[in-house]
Image (cartoon, rainbow, N blue to C red; front, side, top):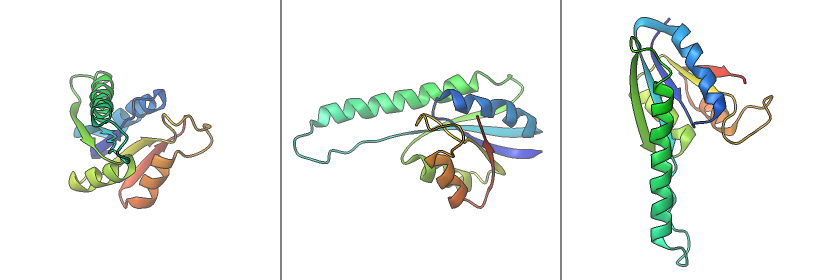
Length: 141
């Protein structure tokens, strides 16, 4: 059993499979941190309208909040769940949060929104596996 589990989500149907595994792995008084990482675009050329990029970034942030809210609703009220939304690069942010929060386990889906074939490990999951010394439970879909 694990006392603190990090549960990253990108809102894909595959990340929903993580919930049942997290419940089984969590100690009775443990905590689950649901994390969604919002992308942030920066203007790369002078021809890009700052307003358009700001609107896209607001949309990414809104989607990230919706992702954690949707996943949090899947847990019983007796489960200690904390929601977290951070802007950044997904794999790097997941690893950093795992370190900062001193989690015991990261549960991550093998593939997410990228639509990769289910037999391949998604790029975010692969980067997390290679970048952390924390225990990782990789959920194949």
